[in-house]
Length: 92
Image 1 (tube, rainbow, N blue to C red):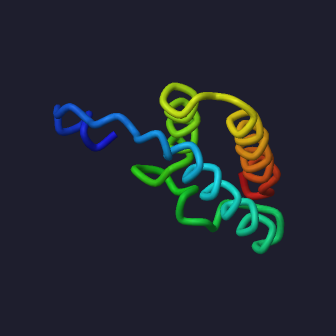
Image 2: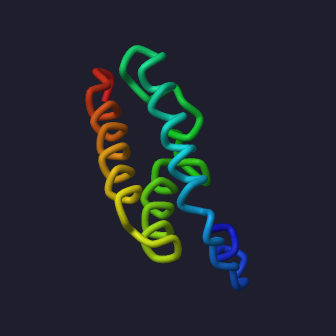
Image 3: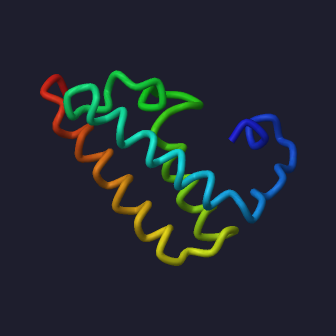
């Protein structure tokens, strides 16, 4: 996303991106549970470069460059539960 803002060509993710992203999502799910079922306090949930839009972009990259497959389908479910945790936040 930064490359787009700077009007430079970004390199495509490597073939190992899918595994790294899956591991990252697995870590996010545990932090969501640790803070009482909500993700709002996590840094990746804030707006801007580290916002939740990055999760959607990474899902796209995983499907496009690392092959969809079962890991991608499982990651869709993981992101869905993260979004559900955000929507369950009573202060929204």
